[in-house]
Length: 279
Image 1 (tube, rainbow, N blue to C red):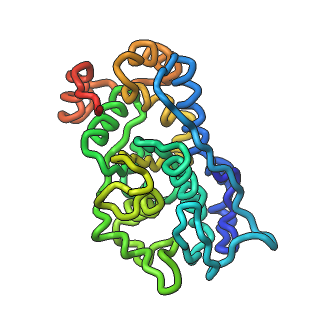
Image 2: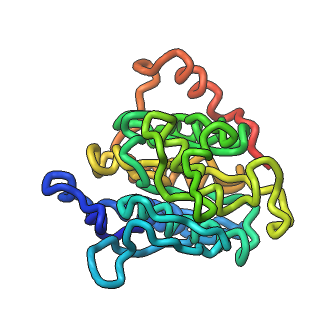
């Protein structure tokens, strides 16, 4: 939820900065999804955490070489003030875990321009530690028109990009050619898990985590997508699905035509009412 992103002291260019009012698109999508779920009578425990900030130049702004201790208790060396969204989102997911005792955390963000390189203008990038939820999210995207595509999840290979000699991690990668979009998501996950291969003892549960990157779609495609309110169409429990679908489809500008989809997409559409729902 960065209300305006100048880049801070790692300032953006005169052509790269205009349009950064949309950098709050992740928080806006979460708020829209929460509103839709409430209006549809969603009956399970549901929280919306909005991580609102502004990234500007000023006497209190972060500077490169700062070390911040985030809400998770982990320290972060700042090597790029234009990688700021992950700092507030790291606090947000840590709050969901520690204070709200969430067992499913779904976050949405515009963390990196690498998303557009990875999945293009029309598919959000999806990073998750749960294969079943990954399949469900892809199917939800095909059904709603807010399409997503899974990206590489290999923390054992990529998290070393954040290695710091003075903190638990840096906030920006060393090599921008090494799965940069996946790395951005792994930074968020680092504040959910004590490590990536077992549940956090302080959480006391098996934690399912999904993160959606939507920068390219929001900056380039704009209002053509309603990310999360529509994508959530097939993610709630089945008891909410009928009313949820009716509410959301009235707000969809278009739904993909299955006759124009790739073969695997057509299969997903024909099976759209037979998905196995994550428990």
